[in-house]
View 1 (cartoon, rainbow, N blue to C red):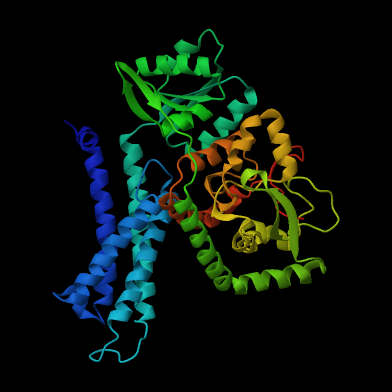
View 2 (cartoon, rainbow, N blue to C red):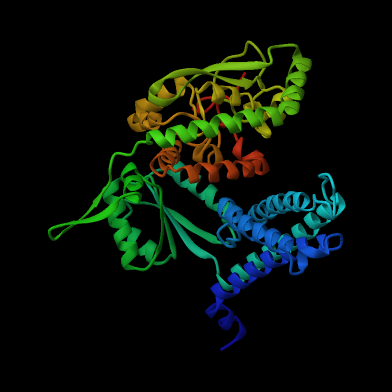
Length: 458
């Protein structure tokens, strides 16, 4: 057995080992460097036990929030970013805890932060280790796993082009061999020749038949969901006499969940307004100085049960221009507005909407009333997303773009509604930070003004 074959056999064990080395190196970096001024944290002491426990527990929880070291599933840069955020937040929490524990008669009579220089050195060394091991992990993954031959099956050329564009971001993992209509008589032969089959926007009956064929022939399958698929995801198996069934119950957020969610909205949004007040002030001054116009933009949006409210954002477009969804290279957007949109600063005033109870921190995307009416003409089930209060962030806001199709927005929002939990809300709040690091993708606009989407302020 050659070296490559040996690595292939123990592939998952090797990836797990690399992940453990990465986390162990991050932990060792923090404790060894801070031990320069605090030798007790690497000895047998209460300080060592408490700080070590905190570091391990927080790193585990934050890795769960951000996705952790899932090399191969995401690009190495995305993996490195997720792990870096997990480690840095863990460092900060452990650092403040260490500073508190050092406040005593034997060390610091009054509270003071430990050496800042060491903290930044810890950050630098850890990030370097994370970058190296994330890159090495990806190289190893694709050395073991060759590109998958990928066939796109759909009924529309535009849909096929859209899927191909999405897959092109993962060119190391997929080799697109072509696209084919689900009605093509050579479809089965084409699927046999490939490793992975991507099904997009197919009629339910045809999709079911194709999935059955792929399952019989051991093919990897991707398909975009219908509402029934999302409901099935949360169903449970029951047996009535000798009949096997799946059951799903009408899902609504409970009174207790609403109460906790509202409390979390109030506390976090109030804290966020206080923390970001310097940024809010700077943005307001920049908008006013740019053209002397209004600082804020207000627009009617739909929230829970179709109730209409006025959303508040920073104005990012010129005043007195035609109102339609932003387009690529839109000349209506001001220079200041482009910066505010890129880093989502224009959305900070929505914390006021959250305090008022119009919105929640996490929930379905608050759409323009005009868009809701247009979407429901072609997609009546779009109204299902109004079963929960609109949110500042959520699946559609994190994983979607301004030009995401109405159907895909609906599926993202329904995934959130049907999978709702307070833990999921917390996870999505942490993951919102990642949006700031992929600003270009997440704020991508429509190619033409005919594309329906969210007007981000004018």
